Image (cartoon, rainbow, N blue to C red; front, side, top):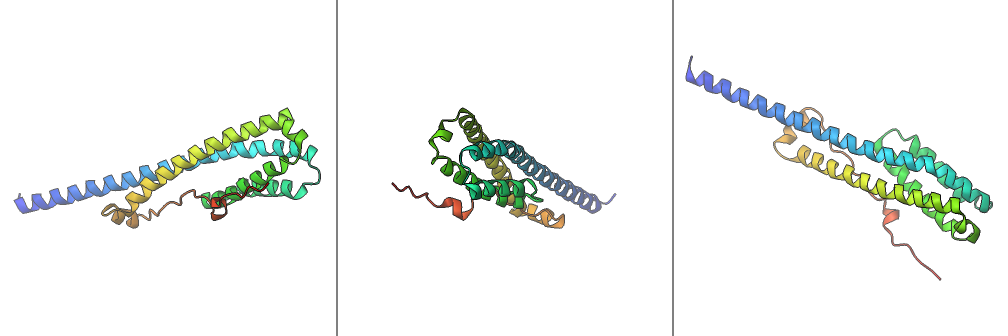
Amino acid sequence: MNPIIIALIAIVLILLFWAVGMYNRLVSLSVRVDNGWAQVDVQLKKRFDLIPNLVETVKGYATHEKTTLEEVTKWRGAAINAKTPEEAMENNAKLSRAIVNLFATAEQYPDLKANQNFLDLQSQLKDIEGKIAMARQFYNDTAMKYNEYVLHFPSNLIASMFHFGQKKYFEIAEADKAVPQVKF
């Protein structure tokens, strides 16, 4: 057999194995990002399950704080029913702001702040918020690695050929970046 043909076959096989390797790496990284989102989703579910109990406890003390309670309920429902990770991220940011307002409202009721059920729920929510933060960090780290691979040459050629797009980061909304004002 002609050495040029053997060399061409070898080059084609090397390129084929290289392309398959890159494709498989893209698939693995994409799966890791999906897993990262699933971990965030698990923690968000725990938060969603806790919120109705918290709202009911506050409702018993703060009967005239209807709009604050409605906001929490509204954004909890929107976050649960989100169809995409992007929509879930946006609705959860709004839910987080509503929860902060709920706790600010609770500060106005000394009996509520001393209620053991409220304190337990508040502690559980604080623990879940910490876990959500860790899950978000894991998600963002895996999304970053995936996005880097999608953008780097020559893997970007394989990524574009097989429609591997960048993943969105779980970011803080601009409204949440502002430093809270404390007034006495």
